[in-house]
Length: 139
Image (tube, rainbow, N blue to C red; front, side):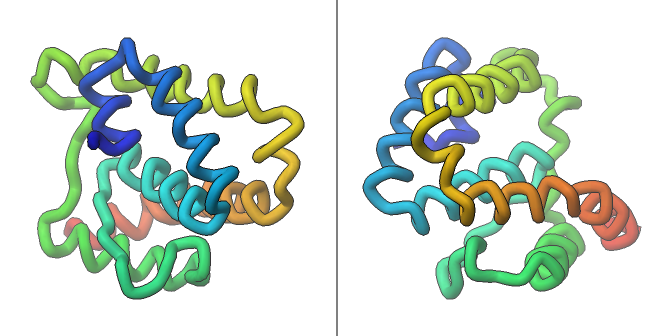
């Protein structure tokens, strides 16, 4: 099974389905669903994390930044938008479609979940800081 990010990057015609399936997984297991959505957020920024010890949703934002910087220092940064792969050219549009589908389909469900919204907002607000720390980590 492809991850949501892989679908967003390479299988644009399945992005809406991937978002719908994510909502189903989230409703069945909110912690695993939140963790998956945070992974999509970081992978969209070019960093793949495999944190099996502790879910991202349970980690402090500062600890996540430390993990991201450590991963980047080890060469774990992918330039998705600058990719030469033919099927990656629509990444930005596919990512917008993914988020739009989640918003459209979950007005009464996942979007009203306070933990989901707070964790996502914490990380979205911290994204400029992530980028700054990641650029320092790359030097």
